[in-house]
Length: 154
Image 1 (cartoon, rainbow, N blue to C red):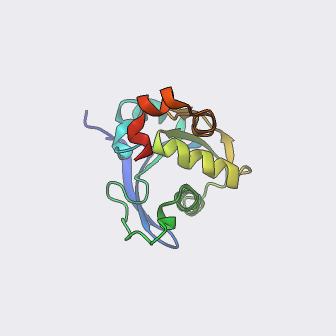
Image 2 (image 1 turned 60 degrees about the vertical axis):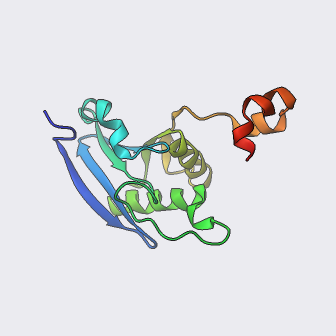
C-alpha cells in the first residue's frame, strides 16, 4: 500500500499563500502540523490509522514542501508563528471546519501553540510533541546551559 493511498491532495488559497495539504478519513477534524525540516509527509506512519476515526488534514506549512514560499520581509514577520497559524485557520475554515483537534510537532508545535492562543475557540484539544519549553529555558539560562546549547545563541 502506498503512503496516503486514501487521502486526497488539495491546494487551498489563503489570503496570502497557497497551502498544499492531504485530506482523508471520516469523523471529527484533526489538523496535523509538521516539524522542521519535515513536511506533512512526516505523518505517514500514523495518518491512515488516524483516518479510521477522524477527518485528517495534513498541510505543508508556509515555506515548506509544496506550499508557497514567499520571500521573507525585513523583519521576517511573514514567517511568524502567528501568520503561519492564521494560514491554518483559513485552511480549516475553507474546508468547512470551525472547530478541530490540533496536533503539532516541533515547528508545527510552536505554530499550534500560537494558533491555540490566538483562536482558543477553534481548538478542541491540543497535544504538542517534541518542543522545548522555550520561555522556561531562556529565563533560567546559565553558563552550563548556554555552553551545552551554544548553537542556539548564534
